[in-house]
Length: 384
Image: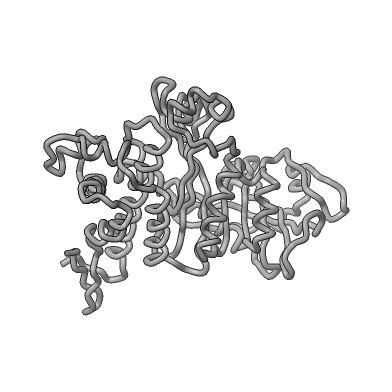
């Protein structure tokens, strides 16, 4: 049973992990695999020093890790079915019409060359080029809480072309090279097809620099605020193309507004913000929409600026766009939580299917912890 929380004479039930285990039980045909999945989830949310199969099996009093290893590597079950249950679980607890979808990637540092998708590539996690895997994730950020709802492994071109490495790592034949924005589009498409609508989508320049992703979002009537590099070009009101940095320099001093976009690790995150409306040139916008160039300027170092392209209902305010842009930090918090609390980066598997299995179960464990956190954070809640 879950822990009870008293809220102003009412009782709020903090969910029990058993409910989550039961929710995904239909995914496992064999009882021993179902049991291993339950123990795996239990260990992921437990106080285990390092969440690999050996230590997790010991934590749940298993004689050996073979059941958990089989769960990840050999048993028959579909990680994508659990992913769909994960999305439904997050929606059940956090769904809100104004929720923001945040797209970002994270790196998983690895040794050797055998782990699927591993190569020397830039990892924002490490802040440098490392031998690592890269996963692209979709985070659902709502007033009640935030959690991941989807994931994709980035397969570099070298891997996609190397048939021997693909076979050894178990990469399905239908998997082709896809850019990170294309992976993001897949996840968003799945969410929309499942009946989920985001108030806004936000992401960093890896995704904002992709005109294909921006145009797809517009086609789907999905508002967005996406970071973009300063050297990219957009149409100005004079119907000529401008580099974003040059166009932003035309903003009058009086146009800047100082706004807080929420709490950060060092207190309120306060910046100066300004915007310029862009002409409706190129792809056709949904009726009643506009496009904008949004600019964020550091208060302490005014020369430090960040740029965003945004599109959405024409009555959108500057404050709204700034708030959406400021929500991107939420996925960084979620990555930190998922790695620190649910073993997201502590797997010891090398193959394609095993990666998706561990990552999906870890995201489900993180979502459960996020729901528990939301229950405990209810106004006036007192754990009894």
